Length: 278
Image (cartoon, rainbow, N blue to C red; front, side, top):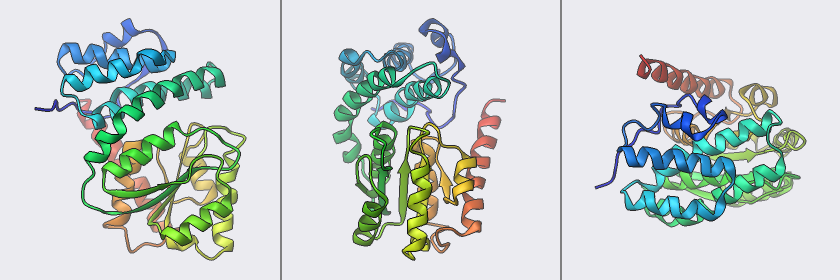
């Protein structure tokens, strides 16, 4: 019987700025058995510290304890890489440290991908996703792609440093419901805007919803360039993608009503989080 552990609530991750002893004192993962809770914190810190030779061992230990692949990705793995992203944004980490943490994530995702794909539910839509031109980083994108696949989407991952023209080719070939751009570097985030401008010039902007994400990306950036949705993590991306192909499917990409509906999903999540914290 699989363990049910809540990863939907965005927990306070301030303890990850200090050390594992502080993490062990938090209420995060408190609905898990004590040994699994300790293992989750160990995995968080394994990713933060970039100790990739040990990562798969922790993953296998969790799987042996009946933790699902989805829970591992959306729980301790997401928490660990979120702290890496914060440190990178605050100039506490630089690319060498980020790449070591990315190696941990690559090792874990390689182990978990077959299990995630086995969970894939009924087909719900098509997604084209890629890291924009000039940016070689793909950990966040891979997590989003994998969670989208598990949620029932067919995902066409274009890889890294994808030029705008390649996005256009893939869109014409696959006719996606959603197109996702990722960027890790501030020097490449402008390529999200350039790609969107090409969509408008090609007359295809309204044919799909555009999602943006990555360490330097924010809701403000999403608003500025006219994207439809900002996803701060894979769970948010899946929630918004599902909404786009169900109750919001009749709204075209670029429609202000669609943009507002995406913001309302964020507000509902924040409200649920506040209510759960009472």
